[in-house]
Image 1 (cartoon, rainbow, N blue to C red):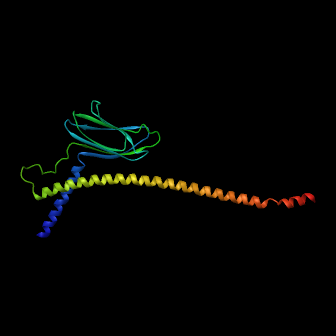
Image 2 (spheres, rainbow, N blue to C red):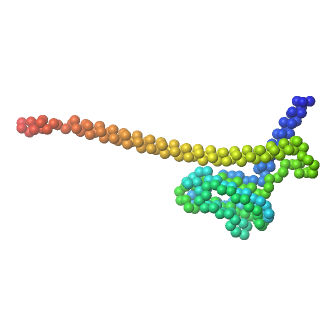
Image 3 (cartoon, rainbow, N blue to C red):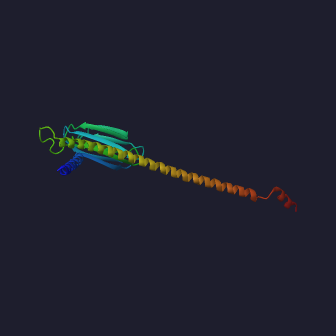
Length: 220
């Protein structure tokens, strides 16, 4: 009986984890896109009135790691604006129902594209199924499910930011490696040119006849 109880407990916890993951991705949009140089990309999301929204972005690669960001309401009112920003977040409550627009601009850059990460959450995260369906005290399993749900959300957020940081560090390391390789090739070419020049100069010194020999040949 104890073994069966452990198995059912493992199954319940697994189902709770799956429900947590499904709820996590049910009300949030996370994506990474390539913002070309001298261009602007806009994204649209329909939001109902009095809904709390959360916007977060981060430039992980490209140029000076900066973009212009503008968030506008359905009637064109600017709710949030940043210029030459690398990372920021903004939380707001929708004052009207409609389609909200978020634009990322790289028009100030004429040769470098940017890699931008965006996290746009609309509304509060829904509760786990069955948790809010009764007014009694939560059972130990329901309390554990909520705790696992919150821990998974924290883990997912930490993993996302860790991947962004790792990607930024890797790209920076690749750029440094390329610069070091180019400098090494340049130094090698300079050393070879100097060596060849020294050989040519030495050969010219020993190949010219001595002054005494040239005078003796003239007298003869």
